[in-house]
Amino acid sequence: GPRGERLSAVAAEHELWLAAGSVPERGADGRVYNTLPFYDPVGRLVASHRKFHRYLPGGEDRAFCAGDGPTVCDCGPELGIVGLSVCYDGDFPETGRALREAGARLVLQPSAYECGAESWWERLYPATALANGQWWVLVNQIGQGCFGASRVISPLGEVLTQAPQWDGAGAVPEPDLIV
Image (cartoon, rainbow, N blue to C red; front, side, top):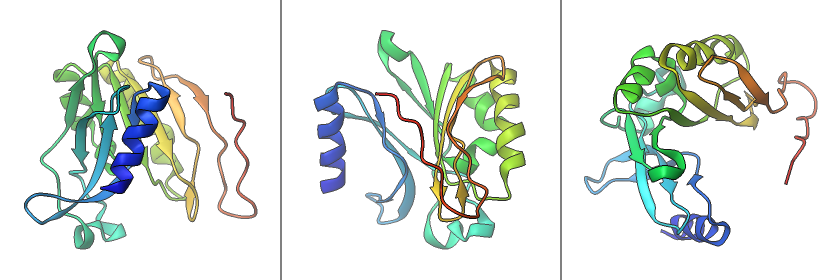
């Protein structure tokens, strides 16, 4: 649709790989999925990951059908095999393990982690990166109940860089943008 066309154009215009968050997608089967589209530097949709672990306390099972499981994409010599995950999918050790077994050394994951779930963010993902020898690039919403703190984690489980974190009160912090 129009959103996909715009995202494709952005990826092509800037010649970049674009993991474009997660969006509702109506599949050919008529069911609705929480889907992460992934575009290559010429704007082709090269993979779509349908979230397969729905967050039941958030009611995702009432809005979305579950996808089939982990998704990987061969991004050639630039990135190698890339794993795609959406939010709660990554909370399960078997997700990182399955992505690693499929060859993924880099995992991209958009999230909407809520304030109060920081301990999961702080503990699970560095452990998963370390246990599987993977880079994890985690992008978390900020504001509207989500705490931000997007980060890059090395295969050694080290948080190499992190965006501002919001405590759920007051103004949302402005990120420092490097262009």
